[in-house]
Image (cartoon, rainbow, N blue to C red; front, side, top):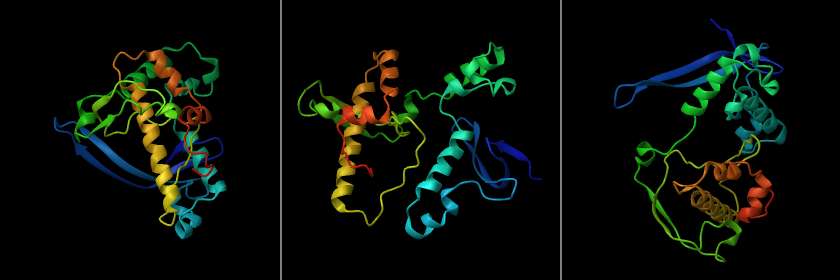
Length: 232
């Protein structure tokens, strides 16, 4: 039986088709991997890459459809515990109501949905080395600090790249110019090494992490001195 489950500002979605698989960790703890296909009250598919003709035909996503997907994700998903509330106060987030349920949800999300590097991050046993003149962003090759050797690479790709809004990022086209692809790969390496150098020390203070994550995208690019191509 179809039931309304996902509610956005302008529509209500139900699960039209679903797929799931239960997996068991080494200690036997079960967890679910699932896919949900959503439709609205007019039985139209939710915004998706899978149903956009421009994507199917050209591999590109036009700006209008891109914005629809981004807005849809923002309506249903958040990456901040500050957006968590109980049902009674879900429309009063800005008021910060004094509520034990809201406080409990905030604590649970902060504790269990925040990433901390543990042994499971290192299962693939991949490592990297950052030279003394790398990992300084736009100051690469100008200043030098200690070499960071044999750093374990997190298999969940943390730390994540700073973004100040939800953005659909398409993969590089197979027909893209080889020089542009090379340039993008160099930018990615520079960003990765910068973030890892900033976050690799266990004595890094929480306030320093906060400062790093609060950087808006433009300021991040300035600190990193990445390529200035607007289509990156």
